[in-house]
Amino acid sequence: MIEGWIDSLTQFTSYQIAFVALISGSAVFLIKALLTRLWHRIGQSNTRWIIIDGSNVMYWKTDKPQLETVREIVKKLIGSGWSVGVVFDANAGYLVSNKYRHDAYFAKKLGLPEERVMVVPKGTPADPFILTAARDYKARIVTNDRFRDWAADYPEVLTAGFLVRMKNRDGRLCLMPDVLTDWTAK
Image 1 (tube, one colour):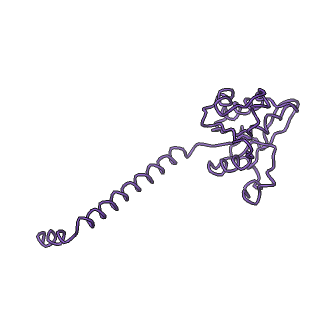
Image 2 (cartoon, one colour; image 1 turned 135 degrees about the vertical axis):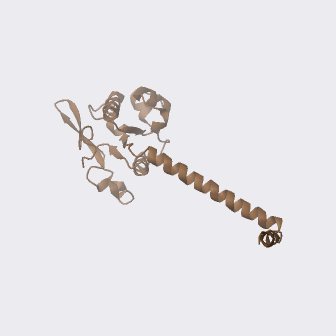
Image 3 (tube, helix red, strand yellow; image 1 turned 90 degrees about the horizontal axis):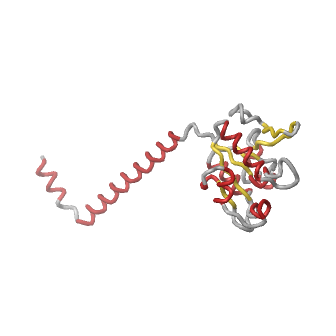
């Protein structure tokens, strides 16, 4: 029986054998990639992401933009167990230091890794970057913006609790819903 099987293998051309090897190698690579991705997701399953609209939050305390306000919110969120990302409009550097600033500058000022901070390209609105990041990371957004212009493409902005807003209570910044004490607040 083995001899017949070996004889049938000799009927394949080298191209056919190469094709089968390529397909098997691709399948192994694909399975490995899927398992790696699944493992990464399992490892990140408890990660709770929140995206801060940095250019919006800078104005929460006064009419003058203050990076300290963003830093305060970042610190509160991280202290409550959130993984934080921050997105700024391209002009944010001019607002706080009278010159263009990129991701690394803001990351250092906020005490975050550079890959967690983004300054969008000049002439590009930050809103779609913020909304896409929130969708990709299944995150909420800290902002007082309602993103009404984007609701058709991002209907999640209409979901209660997706947008975390600020209330000023006797000079204290309070997030609504209170994501600092209740991760499931909606």
